[in-house]
Length: 537
Image 1 (cartoon, rainbow, N blue to C red):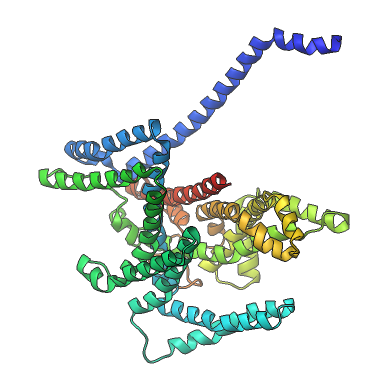
Image 2: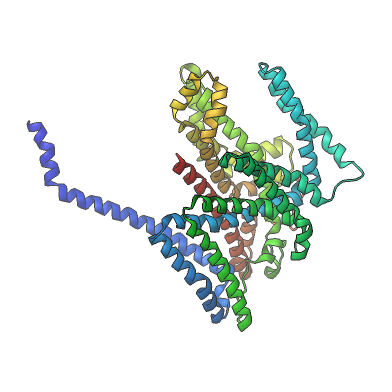
C-alpha cells in the first residue's frame, strides 16, 4: 500500500509545478517556431522587394491594387478561416492548381522546344504502339515464362525505338507540327482523362464525353489560337495541361457541393488584378519597374543587368530533372521494393541487408560536394562523358538524392498494413502479384510525395554542378543532353560574384525568387498529394 501511495502523493504535490513546466515548454516551442517562420518570412520579403521593387510604383498604383486585390482577398480569407474552412481549402487549391499547371505547361513546352521535338515524340509513340502487340501476344502465349517475358518487355520496345523513329523521320512528308502534337500528345492525354473520369464516375459514357471534350477543346486551337495571338501548339498545351485539370477539379467541387464558395477566390483575385490594371491605365499611374518580369524569364544571360535573363538555366534545370526522373527514381523505388518485400531478414544475408540499409541512411547525410567529386570521377574521368553536360549533371545529382528516394519509398511501402498482404496471399496471389496489385498502389502516394520532395532538393543543388564543370554562363539554351548546360542555382551563384550592385540586388534577387517559387510549388504539390490520400484513408 505504501508503494501505491507514493506516486499519488508525488503527483499531487507537484501538479502545479508540472503544469507550469509543461506550459513553459509549450510556449518555448511555439516561440521558436514563430521566430523561425518570421525570420524566413522577413528574408523572403527582403528578396522579393529587390526582385519586384514595388516602391518604385506611384502611390496611386499601390493604393489601387491594395483596394482591388489585397483588401478583397484578406476579407475572403477571413471569411473562409472563421466560417467555412472547407471552402478555404477549396480556395487554396483553386488558386494554386492553375499556377502549378501553368508551370508544368512551361516545362512541357521547354521539353518539346529544346529536348524532344514533336516529330521525334510522335515516332517514339508509334514505336511503342508497334511493340505493344508483341508484348501482349507473348504474355498470352507463354504466361509462365517470366524470363522470356521480361526479355520481350524490354527488348521489343528497345528494338522498335532503335528502328522506327529513323524510318518515320526519314519520310518525305510529315504532318504539320500542330497535327502531330494533336495525335501524339493530345490523343494520349484525352485517353488518360477519359480513363480517370470513368474510374471516378464508374460510367463509360462520362469517360467518353470527357475524352471527346479534351480533343475538341485542343483541336479548336487550330482556328481560334491565331485569333487570340497564340500558336496552335501553345493552345493545345494550355488546354491539355492547364485547362483540363482545372476543369476536372471545378467540376468535382460543384458535383460534391462541398466548399463551392472557395471557387470564388481565384475569380476574386483575377478580377481584382484586371480591374486594377484597367483603373491604373485610365488614371495614368505608373507601375513598378521589376527585375523579375516576362523578359527576364525568356531572355538569355547578359553582361548588362538590364538585359540579363534566366531562360537557358531554366531549360538546363528541366533537362537535368528529366535525367534524374529517368535514372534515379526507378532505381530508388526498385531498391526500396526489394529491401522491404524481398530481402531476407535472418541469417548471413539478413545481416548484409541490415548493413546496406545502415549505409543508405548514412549516404543520405553525406555533403553534396562529395557527390560532385564522385560524379567527376565516375562519369567524366572513368565514363568518358563530357564535363558540364546535362547528362552528367543529372546522373550526379541523381546519385545525391538516390538515398532519399530509397528511404522515403521504404517508409511508404512499410506503411502498407500487413493485413492487406496476408489477405492477398489468402486469395492465392503470388509475392509479385501482391506487390504489384496491393502494395505498390497503396504506397504510391507516399512514394510520389518523397520523390517530389527529393526533386525539390535536386533542383536547388549547386556544389555538384560546380565540381562537374557546369559553365558559369550559358547564353544559348541546350538542345541535347550532351550539350553544356547551366542550372538555376549555378547561374544564381555566378550572379552573386558580380561586382555590379544591380546584379547583386536586382538580377540575383529575381533568380532567387524564381527558384523559390519552383521549390515552393513542388513542395506544395507534395503536401496536397499527402493530405489528400491521408484524408481518404
